[in-house]
Image 1 (cartoon, rainbow, N blue to C red):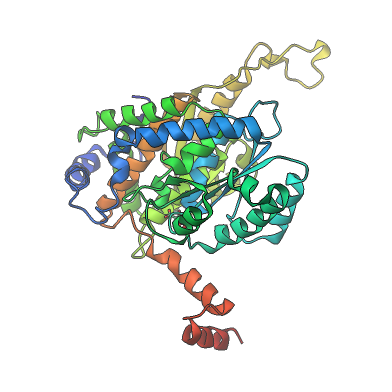
Image 2 (cartoon, rainbow, N blue to C red; image 1 turned 180 degrees about the vertical axis):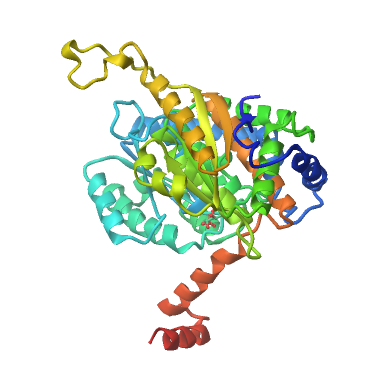
Length: 445
Ligand code: PA5
């Protein structure tokens, strides 16, 4: 298995009986998922997607990515939430956090439409000056305000630059196959479209065209990514917790949650994992945070955040546990050299790699935090590549579904996200929201 789990640093917080007690509930969640009998069972398209994906569209994604690589300096991903987080997470993890700045043969990639900041937009427009630009507008519904505003502004910039016909060759829309305002608009304008499949929610959509087109533009091997997910789909079927790291992780989360843990802190010692953590937070936050339930998903990068959040984790309220994602083999090795005179006192590390030191920081931290009564569960992946990433993505998606069912909730809807949208539309004077507007304005006075 490409993801292994260790509960060695948990055993003082949990007993074997607790695994035994929760096992039938995990088994029940597995049955609900695979028999498609659970809540949200119209959103299970992701379960078989790694083998059932549309092969014709997949080839078109690769061809389009090659075209974009050949004629584009700046590729802009317009989307919010599940419509951009997965792509950005995969690109930064596989390539680099500094992807745009490092030497490469692929376009720079920017993400917009994930806020309503005019500063972010103005800066992006400046970045595009004198550059060849391509847009990928991604929205399942097509009605999400943030990306819709960004798309309007950037479309205008593209039409000014290339004319209407030229812009048409540089705009790709990823949206619903048949319905929605964006689908209609793209069809009317003659933009090439890709599909957000029915039955796959935004936060489960990274392995569809939503994530695959940007990831392919960045030069990553999307065949290997899908193969990793397909291998995870095959591997992660056993309901024996000792045979299935994914189900064991779901079980541990639920056991700790029921013991009063309120926060799960995802920890990585690789800065390039930062956006993966953002993707994971959306996946778990939107899936479990409902009916006044759910673990609050938070994240840190160590050792960076040991110098900011470390004090709280070691010594603050005992409401959290840590899930550490470890990478066995780093992408690069750097060895610490010898210095005459040892003026910085580091000669004791001569000949050691930075990764060796990083791993010792991990070991020391796990022991310190467990001494401080913070349970630690360790997930390990062998290395950073497309296959391992595809596996990890599927691992987290399936663990999330099993965990959500075990918490007796629907892991596939997100009713709470609508509340702010309704209020914002009303306050902006959108037709149809007049009564709500009057009420909100009175409350804001
Ligand atoms: O996971 C989700 O469903 C959400 O995060 C959506 O992806 C996000 O709200 C964007 O929606 P849409 O793709 O319809 O613009």
